[in-house]
Image (tube, rainbow, N blue to C red; front, side):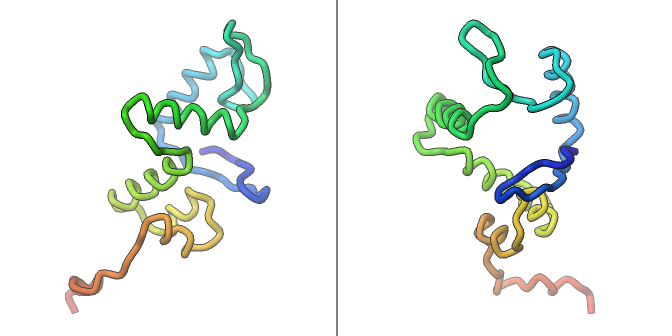
Length: 130
């Protein structure tokens, strides 16, 4: 988990992460030789760390450049959040847990991210066996 993550609006929260991500993060921090602070830091062309954290613009630029490199013209960092949310939901993730993952204050915001709509043809309570 990532404890005490400072999110939008200065809200502090904890984010659960998969074990494989934790192992990759540990591998990265060991190779980078740092054990505290931000995971991703700006690096100069010469390979020297030149600051404490990446700017919002730097993250956006990496995502946009990477997307274009694989043929996706319009894709931003925020699209990654929506994609993550939709994949979590598609694979059985609980709506409330996805809300916590994304750091939303309101479940309605999470529903908008997911494009949730009520299924009328097949009611969710059809299979209760009552």
